[in-house]
Image (tube, rainbow, N blue to C red; front, top):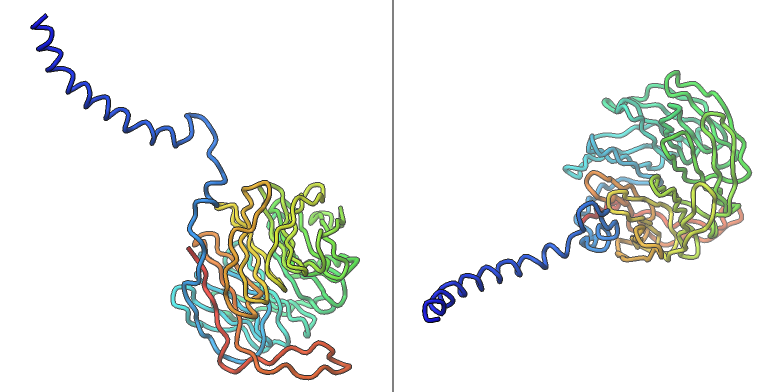
Length: 363
């Protein structure tokens, strides 16, 4: 008995230390998914740091603005500004050039090859083809009546310019740079989105609808209620087959892109004009004229708005760079709004010279 007690006294401290070491490892193992179990998609959105303004680049110049488009691999931001498109280096925040001599620019689309870009010149009723390496105009392609939104469709290698006044879509072959079709629409088109497989979606602002277009046959295959009023910006989650139109009434809709069914209606800022989506983080974004970036958790079935970041009044358009997980929005300081007239019942306040700014948002 006495020899057994000696062994007991010698062994038990080491056993206790070993047991404590094993127990210390159990919480860490329990926190992770079991072997073979799928990862929790909600963790990428729920555990991420909030977005915040990380830089403000004062670009200056005169005139208003419309769409902004990001070329992440080339570190370039394209901004439609009145009679030109300005190009900003996203590594320095400085302008590197512009495509000028236009009438009234709206949207910019980029081909996936890194060679050409396309600009809608609304008052010129044309689409401008430019060389992205030199920023030189290559060709002026006749468009429809008042081309506004524009998008590159990769499956058919076509460019679609949506004509706000003419209520049509002008289809351009990206190889020949020739117009190959004009697709009639039943309302005023706004922003578009593509699924990469030959389907295009576009908002009809005045009808509060979303249309689905077969890019191969160049026909409309469905028309659905947008789920909110006057949709402008549009984003897409191609994996989950969801569309995100942003609307008046401080609402974003979540729509099934196969059936048109309304899934959710998260709250966003007032006066939105752009939407974006992060596949990696399962987040939908909206920027609005009241100076709010709204962030919606798309990994949750209820699609809650998890962040409302103040930016600056007028920062309603936006581009999202998925590689850097950064958003770029633009605005300026404004002067007094002019009096309404019969020709211009809703005049915009003038932009104060030199105040135009790019706001960079990240985590």
